[in-house]
Amino acid sequence: MSKVLFVGLDVHAETIAVAVAEQGGEVRSLGVIPNRLESVRKLVHKLGPVKDLRVCYEAGPTGYVLYWQLTQLGVTCEVIAPSLVPTKAGDRVKTDRRDAEKLARCHRAGELTAVWVPNAAQEALRDLVRAREAAKRDQLKARHRLGKFLLRHGRQRPDAVKAWTKKHREWIQSHVRFEEAALEATLADYVEEVDHVAARILKLEKAIDEAIQQAPAEIRAVIEALQALRGVAQTTAASIVSELGSLSRFPTAPQLMGYSGLVASEHTTGNRVQRGGLTKTGNGHLRRVVVEAAWAYQHRPNVIGHLLRRQKNLAISDEVKAIAWKAQQRLHKRYKAMAARGKNKNQIVAALGRELLGFIWAIGVRTEQQQRPVKAA
Picture 1 (cartoon, one colour):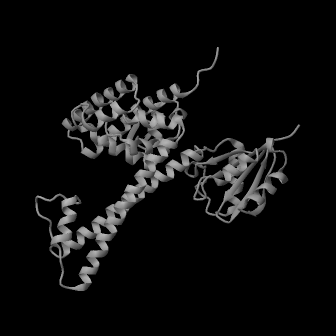
Picture 2 (picture 1 turned 180 degrees about the horizontal axis):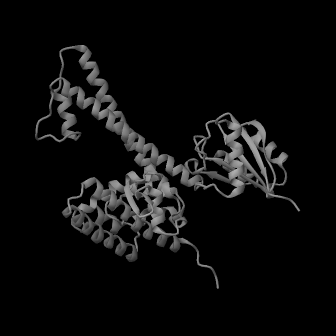
Picture 3 (picture 1 turned 90 degrees about the vertical axis):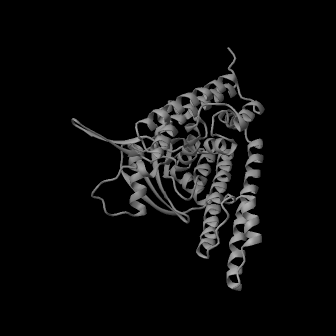
């Protein structure tokens, strides 16, 4: 009878350190191989039957390429959350060989936590959404550079002109002039960068629209359903779905809240109960978009404007609309109650974001269940 072999891989851009832990036996290092498909294929062939292999490696900058290579070869592979790998407080020696051996040993003991691995369509949408997020950060930096440059030289926009509107751009073009050629060149460069980033964002948003149309039916359905919620337009919905994949993989809403890092930290021992700030240990991209959406719930519940048009134009069921309306009523009531107690606005919105995730989970799970084919009796 064959024995299961647990394999730990410490993966880098050019090399992979390999260690194996036999079932009920020793843990030993097998050296280092190049991080190339052919080398991985030779390693799998050397280790024995693929049905007996249990491979793991830590999530990192190399992504999931190795995971896909191993699964295509028929090997059971898991990508491990690095922050949840057990560590010894007194261990001050760290090498690739030791890391691979520790992964193999902990994998055999069942002490590792695997992360969710997106499929090709989910990862493509996630990378596109994150590219837009990066462009938005670049836009903020470009606007700050231009705004501070104008402020340093005493050029302030009129009170009637709002910042970064079309009128603001026209004011800069027609009224801001410098006698020195160096300052004119600086102004032209800053303005060009602002315009360039704006064009990037428009191009990426168009690409997101096209990617959603070409996405699998289940992903499109969830993105449309989430837009029934106030503060969740298409880009926000796409960001949530691309970061989470299938919401049904979370058995309960509190588990999704914990994954986002929007839950309070706690240190309880004996009779002492101490709760602190947010853990912020989960997905930072998800946490940011959910908190941004939660700001919309400070306003009185209603369905008008963009939200009304979204609910009319998209194929959203009455059940989902009812959940979205319940979210408006509950979250606004919570906002008013916490504000009346003198809570800081940022703390209030973070708490609303945590509860908003519960409504997101409810809508996502119901929509995914409706998309699955009904099994014949």
